[in-house]
Length: 327
Image 1: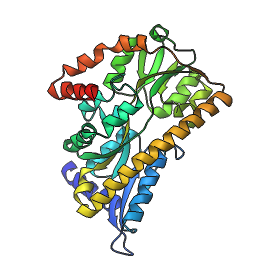
Image 2 (image 1 turned 120 degrees about the vertical axis):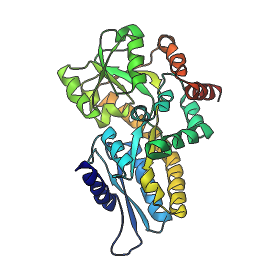
Image 3 (image 1 turned 180 degrees about the vertical axis):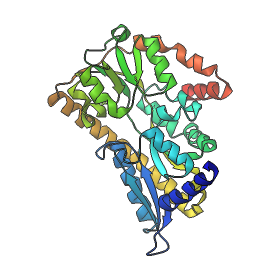
């Protein structure tokens, strides 16, 4: 029975995800689903992308965006991407690691020396290689979006690694991040993003680690009043497309998508910078969040062995780490 149902399911969703408008017989509509708020800088980058695709295709190619997790959580949507049931999504490199282990290199703490170094990597042949590296998993990357630097926020200041000892910090399901927390002495607590606010309020967790937007857009700053800029991970968001959908596009349509994605990357970076300043000001003045700037060296030293540990997984991991270090 399953063998019959799966092809039928695929046919149904394909007609929804990738269809020709019956009124014109020439307009293709692609679904782009993600779990972010519509005020989030990454959503604004995807909105720019969608508008650019529509403009450059003269309305023949349309991106329909479903925000706020309407079609499921990040991992669930990524699984739909693999089936061809959703055309595109935004996914964190932290989530991609469980599908494409090599993305774990991007998630290594302090692998990037600065935001500029991260940009340089993402814009290089290294970044392009990684976008293509997921093709065996039925999707491919189109571009990178700035997702800020992840830092710790909690009910008390995190000024040194010892401040993390014994406290529960929400993390994503990335093996690399869980190992990082163990090295720092904290208690890693994987949970869905939508559960963090209530978990902070109820004391299920003591804090989390994310970029500064979480304080405002998800109201985490109402429950966690201390944000420490240790910037342990600079992990990008990645705009991806289903390989099944990609195969059905013409060469011209593919070029339109790639160019629009690249243009949206630079637009989104500017938006991220300006929005980050706004979020910090709002969190400080309206939510009473205190910002701290700890010495990063003790954190770097505590997790330094993770890069060598990941390099031991094989030549691909070792080569990628060395290329990023040398760029």
